[in-house]
Length: 351
Image (cartoon, rainbow, N blue to C red; front, side):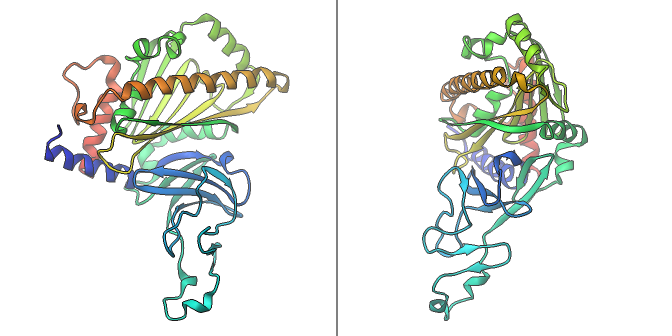
């Protein structure tokens, strides 16, 4: 059971986390050409990214006429036309079929899609409804510099995988912030990296963990493959940067980069998280290594899916009533990022 005071705080946390923060939602390679789109659900908001002639925009996925979805597929290439009544939206005008029949109403040509703020930095796409901070204030110069180096190294999207966690977003995010559970939950997947010497680094709204894999076979393979890529950032070992509230970027040795998002369900208390992991590859230095890297990216895709299915399963064991705004009284040193996440949640209440 959750008392009314805690429910009220979770409601505030849910709304402010969605509406007051910048969210990393993809990379420009996701929108390869004019009229490309990509749909995103963040809590109660259904949105899509869209590439016009010169820029990337973010819109609510709702026609201002009768509320129909503009796009129903995850991604594609199509004009901004409502499939219900054919209203079409361009950067400067709204085209309305049978315009003469609307003569006794407000001018429908002035109706526009609702937009969110968009920032594109080194290819990475961030969106926000009504941000409390600038992107620089939220992430800080050091973190933004790291992310920009990664973003400017990305060449291609290798895979996109989605899962629905039967757990509240607070549970799902916290599971991604610690390695304490790896041995018990991922014995035949992530644990085979044999991660040791974990180092955590914390910023106001970001958290980083690095660890050195002790699996020699994987380490040797990674070193050989790493010689064939061209990247603006040198990352050694396992590396995962979490961006409050819902996103993280992870990699092993910087050979590929994955963006994971843990978007809340339609209600603050719902036991549901919309999870997505997108794998990106950097530019190649040596084209002869392309086939080996393709095999590697396929194996990473398979491994990631297995790991996150295992995470989804274990998260379903934790009801929202088990979560708290404060640190557990039995807190491990490997849960420092979880405790910092909860500190962030407390700060959000007071924004």
